[in-house]
Length: 377
Ligand SMILES: [Zn+2]
Image 1 (cartoon, rainbow, N blue to C red):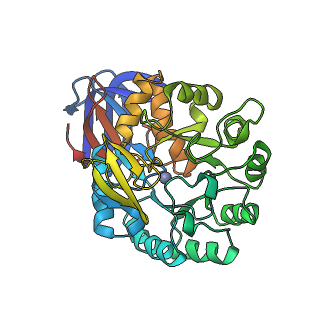
Image 2 (image 1 turned 60 degrees about the vertical axis):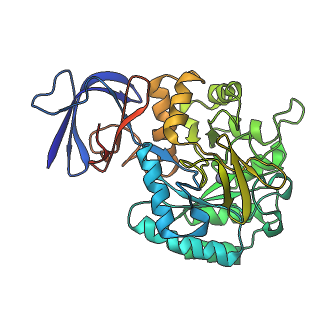
Image 3 (image 1 turned 45 degrees about the horizontal axis):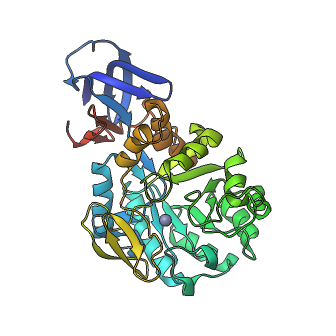
């Protein structure tokens, strides 16, 4: 089965050009400039960008990945797919060993089905001082035994661990994670600049939502932010919802780390795509007002109600990125973090036909995953 998309404005990391592309068996087989050589589905001059890749996402449509409930998780994935996310990992939050292992084991089946690209343990090895919406009573120091139990529960699908490098045993755990093919991400941390660099030396390569849940950038105490931004080995996650991070700080991060080391994430929770109200994130009660999620107790920001299309649009409109740069931070760089950039994250011959069609105001007009329309433009 072959499909040609014609009259498209195709956005690649190199630039934007008018042309067409052909899809066969779920993959892009030809990309051309100008008029298509044969009749195709005309996109009427609309933009086509690669499907978004979200490496930090707790759910949506009322479903919360930390519960491990498969039907609700499928609804969450479907919601994010309609908003252009064609590759995502499920982020859990701090829980007991049994809770985390059960959720990972359940979600591993959705990874087997290709709905999820992996599982992310955000916690439980994080700082009490910077725990945000994680249950402080369940935070603990890492042990090799527990970490192995969690990784095994995910049956090869555990992709990421967020950990605070200053905790006793953290550096050994980072090394163990990397040795098992798990990306170590530093975050929910009270580390100094130096402690953060030790974490990177041990093998950590991602900053979990830079700026949020870590000490602020200070001119005498640069802290994790400066260490993570400056180090060429680290990709920084940013929540671009206009609530978590000021656009000026996004520009600052982007100016230092550039599109190659910046990944937009949603950190979305169950309320995404739903109305305001009361929800849970792990074991914590969360109240959502005007789309902003906060813990009922204490008022900490508790994830977001962001979708990647909004993060992308804001990156262009509020942060000032070009379309090719926005595509890089929303698709290619996060795909590279996951080691999936040979399959997804860019519009190129041989890649999966994971595509988002955007109208002139950069709203989603259509989404294709593996060559099949999720919403047809
Ligand atoms: Zn999170």
